[in-house]
Amino acid sequence: MSLRTLLLLSMLVAAPCAGAQSGNESRLHSDFRREGLELHPCKEQAVQPCNAFTIGNIFGVAQTLFTGQPLHIAVGSIAPQNGFAGGLAFVEHKDFSDEWRMTFNTDAVAAGNGSWRAGGYIKAYKLGGGQIVVVNGPGKTQSPFFHVAPLFNFYAETESLNRIYFYGLGPNTLPTGKAAFGLTQTIAGGSAVVPLGRGGISLSAELNGRIPQLRPDARETVPTIGSLYTEATAPGLTTQPSFLQPGVGFRMQPTVFAQHLRLNYLAEFQDFTALGNSAYSFRRWTADLNHEFPLDTKVHLTAASDQNGPDSCTPDPNDKCPSPTHVSTAINHEGSIAIRLFMTGSIADAHSNVPFYFDPTIGGSDLNGNAILPSYPDYRFRAPNLILLRGTVEHSLPKIPLGAYFSVDAAKSALTRSDIDFTNLRQSYTVGLTVHAGGLPVVYLLFSWGGNEGTHSTFSVSNVLLGASARPSLF
Image (cartoon, rainbow, N blue to C red; front, side, top):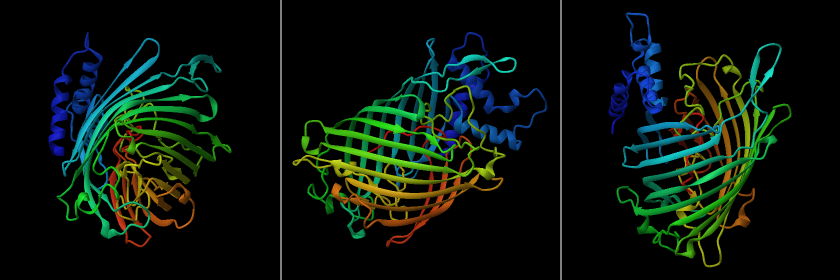
């Protein structure tokens, strides 16, 4: 489906609603009517004649097409080597009398190589309460300093990828072992985040069902995976059972030293139980320690919100996403230095193995689009255990919505948990530009070098809107 076709579809759906009259119309009908008016800017302007093709009107229509509610065009990079995907997203909400809000996101996108993703996402959370206080005159609404209402997520998503590379298991595989396979995985489940009060401390819990399905990829110039590897060298190659995957986590997100340091610590434990075949059951622990030093503590950059769905850039459906043409007056001050330590390890019983398609990868980007050692090819090293040490500097450029980016990675994959240490780490260096265009997808144009396998250039577009929450992990 071409982007032009998607644009036409979006406008055709929204246009009939533009002429509707408010009265006893439903919320959905009202939302479509407002979106239709945004797609026809001259109908909103009292000044006539009106030119719909001014720069401001064109950018306004484009913003509605890509971020509007309830319907907009969904675009973004799908998993590495599977290209750029486009489709449609639908976003709606319902507010309840007890101050709870439920939001609904559904989307479906397809890439040029036949890969695709479709999913539905529901979030439920309590709206922030407030109290009336008097501050030197009229009353003002003041939100409480913190609240402890939980946030619930429910989702069902299927992603089908036609091109994934496998080089074998462990840190010492060779480029000549490159093979290709396809993967379809359905993930359905739910999670909850429970804040514990001050200090940005929260508990999380999840329960997912996972149905993975492997297939050969004979369309590549490299061998298909079954011609080079067996069940012994790639556990899970011949059989892919369904999995029940519960998990619990603990997160701390405090700001210390007068906002000169922002911490984002996550500790998580997951249990992958293979249904009907315990030979593939395993457990996984993760520790992710992020340290951010803002270069200007008075500037608060847009960050992902747990209350947003993957197709929403604001928790309030009545608010518009930031304008993609707006350049902040403080843009010269927007930037940060970050240091991250990430570790993950898997535990399998004596007669069990971790399925290779659930192993994390380093090199290029992984299945979720996260870059680790980006100078190496995508999916280059794969193993049950991983360690990453990263330093990043990102800063906006004056008067334009671009940012300069530099990072240094030191990482390795390990076949055994005892090898998760700081010895024999591979290095990668990255420079490039980032584009933060309001609520439009975040764009990365990066060049990486280091290691011993050449260089790697990356152009990618985030698969969620700016400020949106992440999708379920594929591993």
